[in-house]
Amino acid sequence: MAGTRTTTRSPESPDGVLRLGTRRSRLALAQSGQVAERIRQLTGRPVELVEITTVGDLSREALTQIGGTGVFVSALRDALLAGRIDLAVHSLKDLPTASPSDLVLAAVPEREDPRDVLVARGGLTFERLPDGARVGTGSPRRMCQLAAWARELGHRVELVPIRGNIDTRLGYVSGGELDAVVLAAAGLTRLGRSDAVTEVLPTDRLLPAPGQGALAVECSAGNEELAAQLARLDDPATRLAVAAERALLAALEAGCSAPVGAIATGNLGQPGHSTGLFRIEAAVGAPDGSRLCRRSLTEAPPATPAEAAAIGRRLAERMLVEGVAQCLEGVAAR
Image (cartoon, rainbow, N blue to C red; front, top):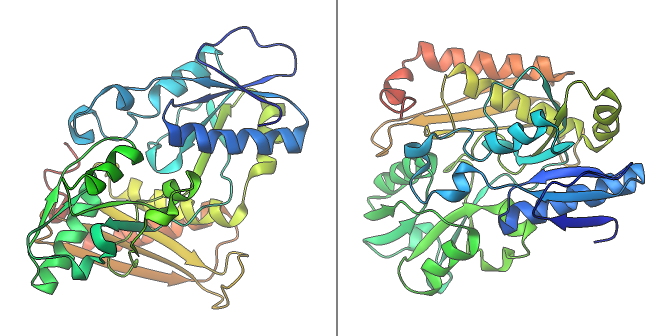
């Protein structure tokens, strides 16, 4: 990729070279490389990818057992704060809802498809999976909603917790260990593996994680010049949507390990949205799908991220008043 180099260390950066911190996974490198190329195009500055190993990369245990929110982020933020890198790229859904005051979310580029997808043997859809089918996912959010969907269908599905990169998860299906796996559409798209998808799962059945499909570009709050340059990558529509989703998540006092799904859509300057309204939908449930609270809120389109966040908080407050906390009992602490 022109103007982009990759290294596994953090050497002294030559003048003008931006050191972009990224996880070492194939997906992280792919999406960070895309951001690096965009930065080069916008600023004319060369970008060097600095690979950093995070706690989430080292452990094969369930995310709920190793810290949940932040396990893919903290090492990158430490490198930023120490000045070993100039900026970092994260999957936005991995970011804790509270950010250090000395870091700034400089840009949220245009979002990929936020939905989840099914990759199943024989090209099957979720509703056509055989009785007793084994479906893999590492996400309590997906397990909760899939279990509720299967329960409604009168379908017996065994939900199997899995970890690993995309190739590993796809291999569970191709190797016959599982009948299907559920993954984020965005990851498969960024790796050029969308051909593996057998069904795009509708959001009226499976709401994505808040911020899913979006990337976050962070830098030091003190580097105002760099923050201003990176801001040129920002997509206003995506920024508004994820502001609402993340504010809802924060108001529910849950992390990414809790079964919370949310998506905001509407007339945000995107093609195809003609309702003139802004809608946020959320679902919170018990891990086994026995309880599922799903609510939505529709309002006039927000003009700023702060207004969008306020809409997200209002929906969360309504859900809490209606007793959604019962669905979160014992979950957020794990």
